[in-house]
Length: 151
Image 1 (cartoon, rainbow, N blue to C red):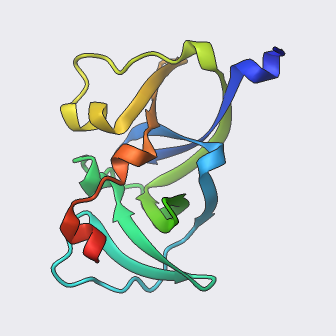
Image 2: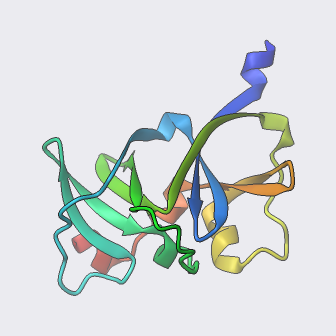
């Protein structure tokens, strides 16, 4: 096992002022969501549908999904394109960060005082210089109720 085998790469994003990481292997693209089509009767976390290069994506407002306040950045929102069980999703984020390589062994369980909804959505945390990187568990984050799946 080499040193590279012990590293995990994350695409980092800021949502509601909090730093999150998504395993780079799960991210298909980063884009500016444009011309969202609203879905009547969809849950509040579903921002709408979007056609991206011929693929229809369900766009999830991550601030609403994770119950986070919007921190005004003045910038347009961005989206991370991900796939789960053959379905394409766009995750609305406030800001894209960098790709970080972090030692896999430094991942810890979420702190016990972390908000319950955030703790459920996280696969773990990494302590960085004065920051906490919450690793998003996409399988859990995209566990949408029956009404959302029907959308």
